[in-house]
Amino acid sequence: MLNGKVALVTGAGRGIGRAIAKALAKEGAFVVVNYNGSQDKAKETVDLIEKAGGKAEIYGCNVADFAACGEMVKALIAQHGHIDILVNNAGITKDNLLMKMSEEDFDKVINTNLKGCFNTMKHLSRQFLKQRSGKIINISSVTGIMGNAGQANYCASKAGIIGLTKSAARELGSRGINVNAVAPGFIETEMTGILPESIKEKMKEQILLGRTGGAEEVADVVAFLASEKAAYITGQVISVDGGMAV
Image 1 (tube, rainbow, N blue to C red):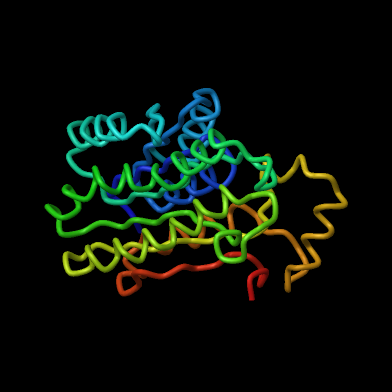
Image 2 (cartoon, rainbow, N blue to C red):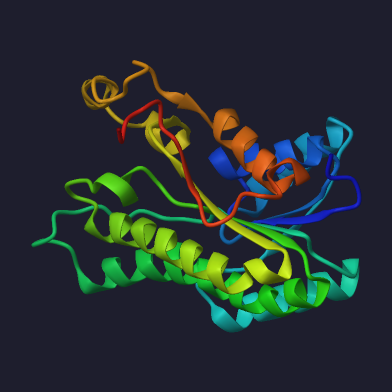
């Protein structure tokens, strides 16, 4: 159980982020639902949590903005006294073939997906070290392990998250701070829902279990890593991909 814990989940207005926020709240955590451009979606997440008996609030912040992340962490600690769980889920895509990809689209994806993780971890690390405790779970992707045509920027960002996770785990482990990554595969969300059926079927052929995953299946792993049941797990990348990257 996560009673008394405060969790910050970035990009929690929809999809996997929303499922993670709901799962942590169900376990008793007070969840800060971070959003950038989707305030209405973030409010929906809070409403769903509260209707289920949990506690949550929204906080708007672009995780790609280093200074804004610092202000968010400062404000949340001032309000709640502590933050115990950080889930870096915020992410965007700007897909294109490498030779057609613009520098701007490469930078946007790296700045949100990868630098966004650094920004929150950097600003929260001092508090976690002071507490001598903390759980950091970074959401990577199966594409960060396998690569994917047309997603050089996204794959690079997600592979970078794996390196960042392992490095931070080595730096922070002696202070009782766990840092892990979760690498989802083909998960049914609004983002994947718009794909043509032909592409979905082709992707399913690569999955050993023969089906797509649910956002709740990713969220359950995150909730486990945030709990004391995972106290002896750090520096790991747990794939939730139905065997796609085997």
